[in-house]
Image 1 (cartoon, helix red, strand yellow):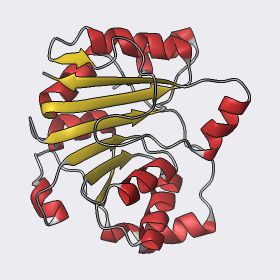
Image 2 (image 1 turned 60 degrees about the vertical axis):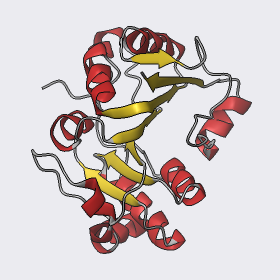
Image 3 (image 1 turned 180 degrees about the vertical axis):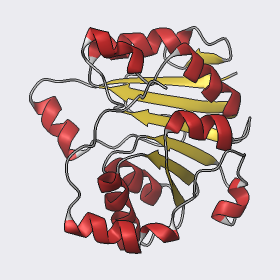
Image 4 (image 1 turned 90 degrees about the vertical axis):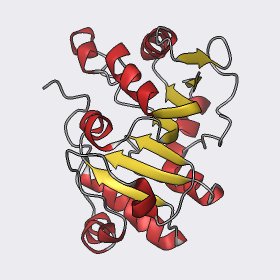
Length: 222
């Protein structure tokens, strides 16, 4: 299977490792090849957002803290980032995030029921900048179709990248999905979608200061 993510992003710190062992069990949802009951996972019925590839968790924790009325199913494969997010959730005493440590393509295919999501966030996925690696990029017509199936009516897909070539590819893949419509006709003028804002992390704020813009795309299920 072609992987949509690269090698591990650095070594795990002692604090991240401790949070991975001690804090993660409170938030973890084990991967399994069957649809999960999200109401049972969160203990309530609320709009659910799928966060794919949350990195070190800064954005996910910030959005979940700002929008306690939403529930977030956060998917990542790297232990350092998972430990980092678990540590932030514990520090902020957040109860509206669950973490799946597994490949997002398989999580969407096997665990997420059709029509169950209010939104999908895919912020700054691995850009695979070399041409020979473009086939590994996550945002493809096939994956976009799978995501569209799992959105409720008026559900949102919000993607962002700071690689222009990938941004153009995302726009093409999303635009060709007949069950989606672009809320802005092209790239979004801001990082806000109808449910929440995409916060700017320290890493991407530094990139913007250095002249590296980010492109946001916001599509709605019709």
